[in-house]
Length: 215
Image 1 (cartoon, helix red, strand yellow):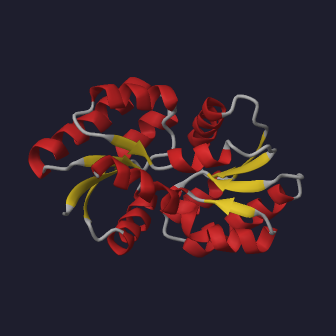
Image 2 (cartoon, helix red, strand yellow; image 1 turned 135 degrees about the horizontal axis):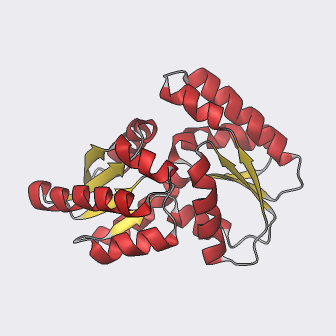
């Protein structure tokens, strides 16, 4: 049986990566993509009510007009409190794309390394990790220039900067690396090869969660 899955994006950096993965790896799911870059601005300014209202509008519309069965929120900058509020008002099941990855990462004894390119993602990723494991120690590496390069279409510069950031982070006596955004997921093998550390990404780890929502 085929199910319609809403892929709800706040950044165009996530659209192709997520849509292509689900089309290739989950033929039983029919993706419906909605992008609202205005939500990213709200998240950057920490205007949580406006962001949640905007996302909920798209979820409700997708349910009514496109008959979606569940939604995968691909934006990494929503914390546990925001997702709880969004779920409480949603007419369909929701999963934030990095929830399964962060739950797995939080089971580590640490310290672990967190790589991010969107500043708002750092606080929310830490909130999720400590939601799952309050005692977890985390080293953070933030490189917003890498995301800027990706958004202007310079994937080569993005990848080079991200790998360099991960290599520097790996020198800090960490046990593994967590790639905080789905836009980095395709580089997980390269990061692991460069650093010699287990590298977690949110794209592949989200699929089991999505399937459980629609089963």
